[in-house]
Structure formats: structure tokens, C-alpha cells
Length: 101
Ligand SMILES: [Mg+2]
Image 1 (cartoon, rainbow, N blue to C red):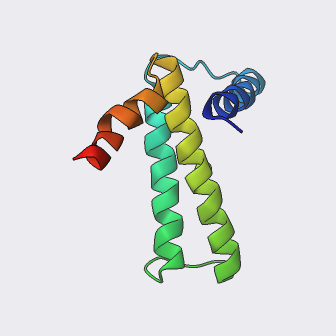
Image 2: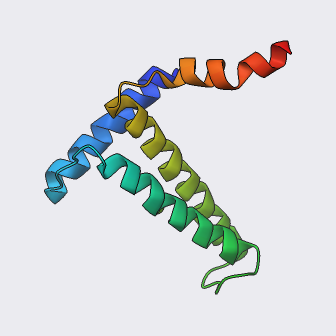
């Protein structure tokens, strides 16, 4: 699946979530959600690495960690989409030029 298709599907889920929960996703909402999800990812990372209170099995925490990575990734894509950022071009320009040096 291409990144554009992934973004389109994530946006559809986000649209449904916002409608069902009555959330107004204004300009900085996506940035705030990245921060929230990064906190949740950090929490799972700490639990999985024995530096947080683990309440589940390591396998369950690993699954939750993977889900939080997906949440961060999804909100980064939504943030880019809502700010007219071509994330593929941005990654190529910022990261891949180092392959040519
Ligand atoms: Mg989350």
C-alpha cells in the first residue's frame, strides 16, 4: 500500500472518530495528538523495558507498543496532510540526500 493510500484510510478513520466523538480538529489538534500518542508510546516503552509499572504480560505490552507506534505514525501523517506537507518529498529532501554524500 502506498503512503497516499495509507494516509487516505487513516484520514477516513480520523474523520469517523471526530464525527462520532464530536471533536473539532482545529489547526493544532493534530500536533497535540502527536504529543499525546508519543507519551503513550513512551509509557509502553518504559513498561516493556522494566522502568514502568507493568500490568500485563511482556507480549501484551509489546502489542500495545506496536499500537502506539501506529498511533504516532498515523498522527504524523494526518499532521502533514492537514498542513499541506508532502511527507514523501520532505523525507527524500531531508534524509535521502545523505545517501549521495
Ligand atoms: Mg494511543
